[in-house]
Image (cartoon, rainbow, N blue to C red; front, top):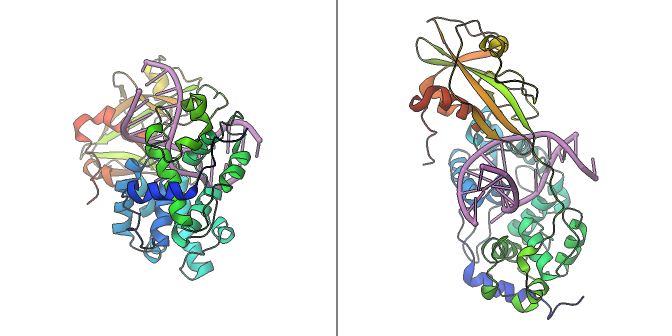
Length: 364
DNA sequence: TAGCCGTGGGT
DNA sequence: TACCCAAGGCT
C-alpha cells in the first residue's frame, strides 16, 4: 500500500535543526563529531538509555581522553569503570577494539562501514552509525528507533525481529542526498522524542502526513512483535564473609560468559533446582570457607535478561588474619565501591551490610 | 538462528 | 505487580 504522501528527508532535517537533543557526545551544530567519542558513545548506548550512559561516558572520557589512553589501560581498570552499566562483553570488546584500531589503523578509526564492522563489538548498527555520524558517510543506520519509525510510516504488519531485512530496505529509501550523519541522528531523535513506543506525539511529527500507521488510527500498535518467552527463576546462595578488620571476601569470575571478568561475592550454583527453604547446613554446603554461617532475612532478587535470580544471603565472621581461600581475596569494605562489581553482587552485599556499603562515587 | 548477555526507568 | 523498553553484538 502506498503512503499518503512520500516522507521527505528534508522535512525531517528541518525538524532536526530546531529540535535536536544536546548530548554529551554530540558535536555542536555544523561541527564534526570526534570518531573516538562517537564510537565510545555508540558502544555505551547499545540497549542502554541515554540517561544511564551519560555519566559513564563523562567518566570514561575523563579517564581515557583518547583511544591511546584507553588501549594502554588494563582490562581490569576498564571493567571497574564499566561496572553497573551491564552487558560486560561490551567493555571487553571496547578494550579490544581500542587496541585493534591502534594496530590495524594507526590509532585512527576507519571511515568505511566494512572496516568498522570488522572491529570487536562493532556490528551492523554501530558500523553504520559511526560511518554516518563521524564521517558523514551515506550509511543506512537502523536501531530500535528507526525500526519503530519505519514500521509506522509503512504500517508494516510483519512482526519483529523477522521484519528487520524489510525495514532496512525501506529505511534506505528514506535517505537524503547529504547530511547523512544528521539524518541518522534525526531518525533516532524522532523515535526517542516524538515517535515513542507508547504515546507517539504525532501532532508534532514532521512526517505525520506521510505516516500510514497514523492515517489508519493506531500508530502505537506498531511495530508488531512476536511474543516473548517467559523468564524462569533460578535460585542460589551468596556468601558474605566479613573479617574482623572489616574486609569482605571477593572472587573474580571467569573471563567470559555471564558477568565475565567481573568481581563477585562467592555464590553457590544458580539453578531452578536449588531450594532456598532447605536447612542452613545444606545452604552453607558450597561456602567458600568454614565458618558459623547465619542466614539474613529474605532474599536478594535480581532480574537478568533471560532469568530471574533469587539469592539467599549468608553471612559469617572470620577472625583477624584469616587467609583468603584460593582464588579469593579480602577487600576493605570502604573500597568495595572501586571494585568491578555487577549490580547483583552489590545487592547481595547491601542485603548483608546495609548502610556500611557505600554507593559508587558519582562522575566528576 | 535463536539464545545469551545487565540494568534502571517508565507505566 | 509485571510487564515493556533502551543508539545491539556474539556465537
